[in-house]
Length: 507
Image 1 (cartoon, rainbow, N blue to C red):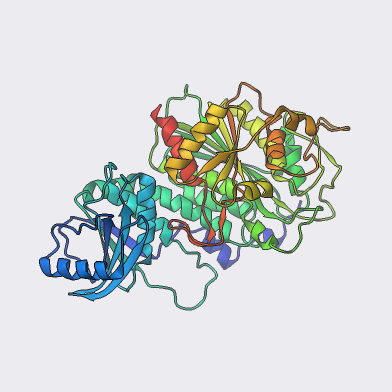
Image 2: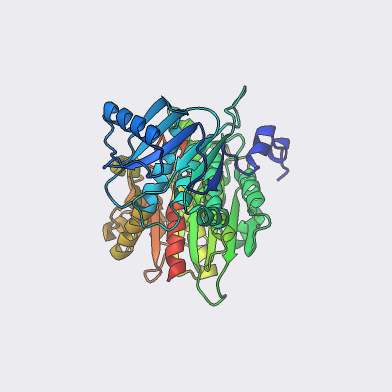
């Protein structure tokens, strides 16, 4: 097919999306006795003990101010004070009375983004009740996640950079950990948010690949490969090709392979859905809220971010990320409800709704990944069904697997990472419900529920293959901010899968 100019020429906005993420504030680490700037953040637990090295005059003034404000030190609460001594502003943030985990520290770092004032900000770290080795690094990671903003299409003056100094006795360890590890995680999450926030006009399979290729350049032991239409035709990936038939932008299959361990070690495999825009195809979605379907690539973006950040830190693991990419559009060439597609492993699937397209990407990509890479565990992640959001709201991603112990492991990973998941059922009757009269299976069974979607994918996974399906449709987008995720695309999934990788790396 001859490509149009629109497919080959990138706009200036699209080119800016290819760039590495930028943050509004510059972060550094300093010793605990560093001179304080005009603006200061203090973390106080519920006994409201002030830092021991604070001078008496300031300590007395701040104590009186705290008492007068009614501040109790509950976790995540904050109070701003102005004009105390030589300080233009002092922000106190409560840490509660429990031992602080990495997840807690990320949230506390995110809360510090709200500290008022312009110019340098000093965040005092020592005295936190935590067993974390370098808490300044985790606070700084949380700050960076909370500091993200998507400004590609903003005109006029933007906020100036702010120097943020984390002052603590762990400064050297925190600086090293940030440089070798956490900076890559923060960059990856920002890349994912950029891809999810950008309009479908600018992000389609080709430009998605370009952004990931740019981010991957120069990283040791990370290999990138891309299948186009001809390669997927040779592999018999009729489902991915079917989803993409209605778009002027051809589908792609993007693969990242990171080899950080012995070649004899089976990899961990991550497969992410990458629908760069989802109109629903012939089963057209209503206009209300359809603009949000620019974020239907969230699973693929999270997989890309996890692969890149894992490779940047040189993890001792073999990891593969497979990202089927397509745009689901209602063109004259688009697939119709009732069409039958032949998948990678030869099974046929009857398309009951073209708006249940994500599972069609997986029925090619998942068996391909299993056959080619023989993974120890395969995890597929997607904004697959609206039903998971209705069931679990925006607090949990849905986890579906045949192995409940594996589901419990995923719940533990979610708790520690700060991206929670909750199990949903996968019953034998779900498989019976997707039997087709004219093909091997059908893509839905009356409604595109979360468990039915998982059953469609599970049909292509052998019983003895460890497999987890993550439906993130309720958590990928924030209508209101959290400490570590501003309003808009949350970048959800990177922290979850990063923790998963670290757990498997440690085994």
